[in-house]
Length: 302
Image (cartoon, rainbow, N blue to C red; front, side, top):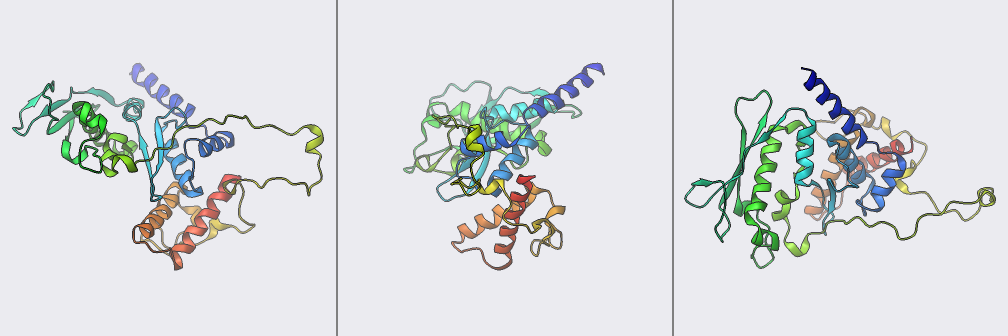
């Protein structure tokens, strides 16, 4: 029992270290790993980082925005493993097994052609058997525009599909921690190779300079650049009191009564849906998105 208690304490301490998002770190994330993110997209990304305890600066979790403006939050397989380990309930996993079209499972894949599928089981405390997941190669393999396999999927097909199977098994074992998150390998098939755009970490070449004492005492009407839009509230009104007019789950509730990550997620869904239908946001949907943006700015300023 003592070992279990120590493990749980370690889990809490480790998670708190990676979820300390002060203003300086948020600015760093926005200017490096989440370049091009809107206020809502940045808020949703940060909430996912906090919920999972994964650090975007060390590339455990990624902000990805494709050419259509659609946003995805993805993790590495190591990020999934870390979340499972921190839960204190993870007890390892089975070796991966692959099969061909004949359905016979083997523990080592030596054929030159890709396997048809892979399965992995995850052991979780309190469960009598491993939780298995099976990934079919053709459903997840990333391909080029001409239909041929992408480089890594052609060169290391067994490894790549095993990562997908492991991701599925880990999410099945830890749905509360990993729901809504997907690994890069799982989402590779969603976008052809040449269209996939992953924001890389780019550190600034020139560090910011700070004003001298004389500059700090400059007149108020000096040419001072405006603050970032996500750092200050849009106006003096209280957007948190706005009553949501749409959505079965939130209709009739005030913004301040709904978790901010759920607000951001719903607003982004509305925007993505409008983009897919090639229509602008209108009416109550447009009003809701605007109010959510103002509310997020307000929360950022506090």
